[in-house]
Length: 357
Ligand SMILES: O=C(O)C(=O)C[C@@H](O)[C@H](O)[C@H](O)COP(=O)(O)O
Image 1 (cartoon, rainbow, N blue to C red):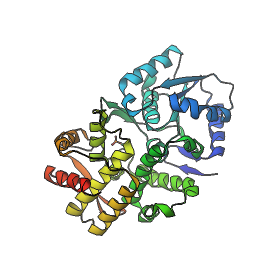
Image 2: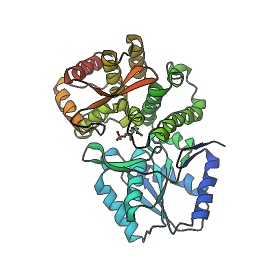
Image 3: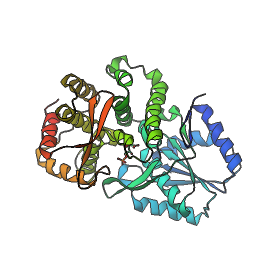
């Protein structure tokens, strides 16, 4: 039985983890349990969870629409209203059962309802397991601008049960993989090396890879929970990645781009920029580009879109005093934060990405 102890809560792994929820419910005696789902996790994941939870307490199910486009304050208002109508009080418990949208939004809803009620995250996507559900970032998008509204607040516990991944689309698995690659790139070359040849990757070992990925994230967040320094490195590839993701969210006729797919492009761009500004070697840059390109489909970014994507960088949450602060690599496994990058170099990097296939 595996558990990771963060400074403020525990992350329990696999089927035996549910006993911790059951113990928690017995000890904390919540007035009502609310399980937040979307239509997918309602159908595919909730039956599994309900079979594992043993309680005589009332359980209410709240369903929201799936998809990043619904990670908005309007959806929160809907959930707050349902909580209120169903008589939720400060002793209620919210269990977030879903991907990053559910754990981000559900964590935010719980953290702000009546100034904060308890929540537990049960991530059902790879991305949410290795990244979104861990670390306490909760929140929603402002229109299509990523995660502009939110609070950092930790769950009571996180349950990682890879059984949920059996129903997950390959594109969603790839999306989560991007954050695992990122963890290797920013902290742990040996972990990155495991992904260098995907044909050698043992998917039977996925639980271990997830565990190691969460260990890396936990290590960073424990040192810098409020993102004053080291935690910024978890945003590697996200500065332009978020801008690209926002741009595609606001242009739904373009390709449907998942968060990890946008971050994968962002990591290629940031690595290229790292060769110019922070000493990443050409060889490591090529390695990063080749590994990422071997996993993700090429997404054409038109030259006519460059300016609008660059414009979106001004909403990045790492910005300060009018500066856009990039995270760059000095080598695989080592980073430099708060790097200023000219628009010309960003355009050069976008051209590099477009010609890299
Ligand atoms: O936990 C963090 O810190 C991260 O930056 C992890 C990111 O991978 C994650 O996508 C996060 O939700 C983005 O955070 P944001 O603060 O840039 O919105």
